[in-house]
Length: 205
Image (cartoon, rainbow, N blue to C red; front, side):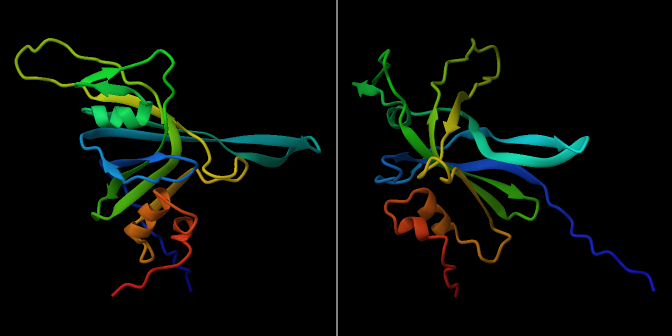
């Protein structure tokens, strides 16, 4: 009798939307989640340090140092003055953005969504990072306008304990246990209780 292997087909992810952020203060987000429309491209890069230890004339064990770097490259058609105040700590007076030489970016938590071919979403939350200042890349109009998006890179650190704090969470709508409200409650946590939002599975009618 032949054994039949059961193959589970993987899915593909595409698209970028539903970008939002919250201003982090002391590892919590006291204010409201703010949507920032116009997301055209997003790229998350996670690096974990691996080291191979040799023994007995060959590879012996591979050690992991955990996530050493987490970055998020975003392209948004217009990072608004309100968002720039939150992200970079700039002042805005009479519609004029003021960039002080000694500005210090604020910590930001972000959420964005991609989706699979069945339409179900994959939600990504990055919990505490600072974004780089976007430049300006534009050109004269010759025929059809071809606008360029603002580009910024966020560098993320652990939220909470520096040794074992959380950096990234990913939620999938193809899981029956996934609840978007609980996901966002955790990302934009206002209190210690909100950090327990993923510990219990909410009942669904």
